[in-house]
Amino acid sequence: MSSTNSKKFLDLFNDVDEYKQVYKKPIFDENAYKVLYLKSHKTTFDGSQLAAVKLLYAWRDKIAREEDESASYVLPDLMLIHIAELMPKDIQGIRASCKLVPELVEKNLEEIHRLLIQAIEKPLSELNDGESNLDESLQNKRSISSSDTNIPIDLSLNNDSKRAKLVSEK
Image 1: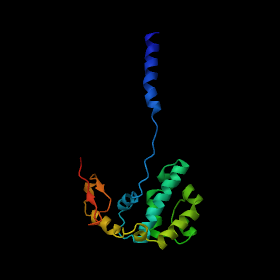
Image 2 (image 1 turned 180 degrees about the vertical axis):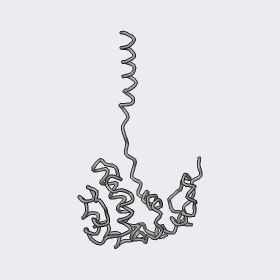
Image 3 (image 1 turned 90 degrees about the vertical axis):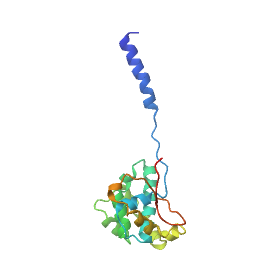
Image 4 (image 1 turned 45 degrees about the horizontal axis):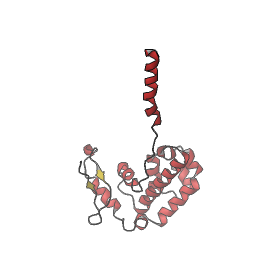
């Protein structure tokens, strides 16, 4: 075998490991909606609006996995927060709250409407059995200056203090 052919063979052999890599979708975290809410800088969401964020976030993840699309393709973050903020009472209101209605939102308008009605009927405190101080605890975290955006934050709620804690770096 010539040196050129052996080099090509070695290159191919080395590329095999790269081709074996498989993308693994991250596991759904049912509390990740808190990060989205925190990033939105909305401080006046009531229990129903927070419930809408939680329900829409879970719905978006489910649809993204079913359709093999990114979550932000299904429903962009800002649009999710905007819909939860407005809490439209009907399907036409959902359409009106989006400048451009994403394809998968249009396809699932009735389900989104049902989720918003559910959020109105069962605010976050009822959905989470006692997590009613979420808004307060998220506001407490906002005292961290915006220049400290690289500080990891534990968004889980402590039952004793109901406040978020900074994660100590390992």
